[in-house]
Image (cartoon, rainbow over all chains, first blue to last red; front, side, top):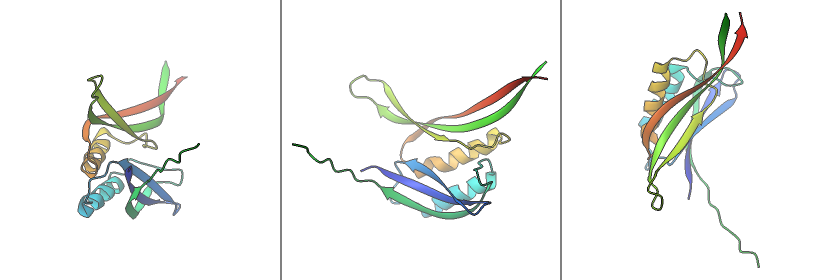
Length: 72
Length: 74
């Protein structure tokens, strides 16, 4: 089913800001994920309602399963 | 003289999803990142795009930046 990679950052207000990517590469390359997250913080080109992104919070792959129920 | 003041900026990554079997046309998927700083440079956005590309399976076809500006009489 559809998988997404979620990159979670903390902004200046201490709130979590999430960026997602579809079709993540598996198995996950933890080094590449961290490098990308560090790069996003270093480049400092993104902002949020609570200010700049200041720290990495977490990263995870989320899978969504859909089961259609047949109606009679 | 009118002046343009950028109010909003979006980064768009356009991925190639392959060729549609029926129509034969190439299929693209777009991923947008809003909340791009208006002061962000092309270098910064390019660097971020290049870092994000290897985290997913699709081929990065194009990187776009979409800016909106407000025009005013100076």
